[in-house]
Length: 605
Image (cartoon, rainbow, N blue to C red):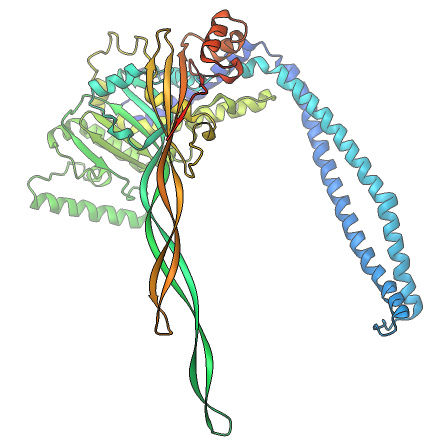
């Protein structure tokens, strides 16, 4: 069932509609791909059954082979130990000065016989059995690999149909009011800037790793992951061992006093703090909406929504303190829903009237439900920042989740494995994405407010790829491809674009990193010898370096990756394209309606 109404209660809507709708949409999309590919479902099931049987034999045979090797090792060690007894006897006969074992001759002959028997069994029987078993395992592995290759060939057409937009299609079918773009276009970014006041200051010292853009009832959003850089401080330590002699007075056991020189030792420690680049990844949602255009606020998780007795006590205390603050400060007001006020904790809001317009009594109630729920969703795990018309959500549940929706995760030789991974990932992706949007969905005014271009040409005109998407494409390659050769740190990739007369886009990818120069500071420390000593502390100075590499992008929104793979070698148009950019077809990549790759020419600084 498709839920097409405004989402006034996101928690209930997910539990009662969207969770099941998403599962059905994922099943439907996968079944359509299977049907379109024309794969032999029963044939693959039968072949994979044979593969699993061979894998079981390999697992059992591998365990048996390992056990035999352990037995061989134990017998060799035991045989060596037993052989040591007669060897010691022989050495004593040759060298009488060597100690002899107090054993009768018969007791020394038996270990020799057992040792010989052990070596005989190892080299004549056990080694042969291990070689035979290893040969059998090798033949089983070869047979299994051949069947796996055949199974991959069976599912080749299906694996080729998985694309970067496959997961997005499942989301679209789940929420018809939601639009997901093929890629984050320059026009979409321009609308965020021109209509909603987004600035590129946010992107300073960041590089976009992945991004998904779209709109909810016309209001644009982008879900992204970035690699962030800042210059922090690192503490370097050093040490110096010193020693000195000093006189010591002592009394002997006869009561006489003496003096003697003793050597004292001490390790001096020193440290210095020096600048050092720091990097971390961050996932976030940016959403533009013209409702409450003058309002700004921020909130962070309070840790009061878990429902434990301790948290309930802390929540009551906070509600009381907010009430007392409102009594003393006429500019600070609390809502009628004191639980919302304490849990949402947007005390820095700067426009109370517009705040109340957004957070109606219904919105407050739904926000409390969202924050206190840890069964259906993720509870109070998000930062919510609003700056005029721009909203940003930073949820903790995205930190360890892969939002790329890469089709590579679905490709396999076993159709049942594909089905399990596909359904599981789509369910996880939709839940993570939905509850990232949920703090915005609780606000009815956001869904009722349409942007100026809604219903006209908004999101319908073609557009060039944005620099966010260009950074994402560049980051999809091996990091070494763009790294400056002297860089010893991670690199922040930034891009600039230059449209070409033929419709392609020439992108300059600049990798910003740091080379390291080793230094030594000498820090004076006072030692126990009464002197000052220079303790060496080694540290690294990080000096910026950058390398700019040319990159190209061609937009082909009407084509799929499968169609591109089929045409790139045979099409005269594509042959001319690759010749113009000086690269082989195999070196180009396809992603979400874009063909892209790297040219050879580059500059370093």
